[in-house]
Amino acid sequence: MVRLNGVDLDVLAKARQEFERNPAAARRTNVVEGRWDPQTGQFVSEIEWGGRTHVIRSEQPPFMGGAGRELGPLHYCLYGSAACYVGTLVSVAAEAGIDLGTVQVRIENDINFRPVLGLSNEPIVEQVRIHVRVSAPLDEATLQQLKEQADRHCPGMYCLTKPIPVETIVTAG
Image (cartoon, rainbow, N blue to C red; front, side):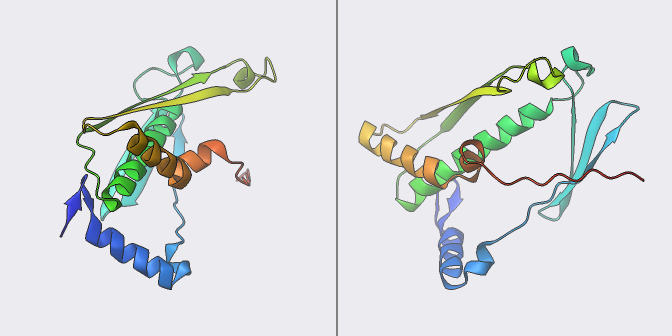
């Protein structure tokens, strides 16, 4: 097993070969199911992953009626975006044989809650900023090349920058 940046390159190469040979094998459907608990005012989800059940809770921000016991849903969006971006960055660097050392990320978004409450038609999310720092002493050209690849290949970045068809169905009973 060859690892670089924490990425198992043998497994990654095997997946690349399989997906080249069989494009259908590259498709997955991720599912999150959950429920709103009216007693706690929290959204609770139990997700099966890696042979384990992971329980995730969130609630509205305190200024929107939450109690402040759990993270808000947007924190999970930011966490997922940051984790996906860094995961993509370290993977493309590993495949290129580049050791990044320690990778730190800070992700921020500017939110306008007026439209959430129906008080305006302004954009809800005004901007997202991702700041990444690697400890390896890499030149600007290499960093820019890795950034461009991560921007192009990261599923989280795709979700942030491209329109995606969404179907919402609400039923009763």
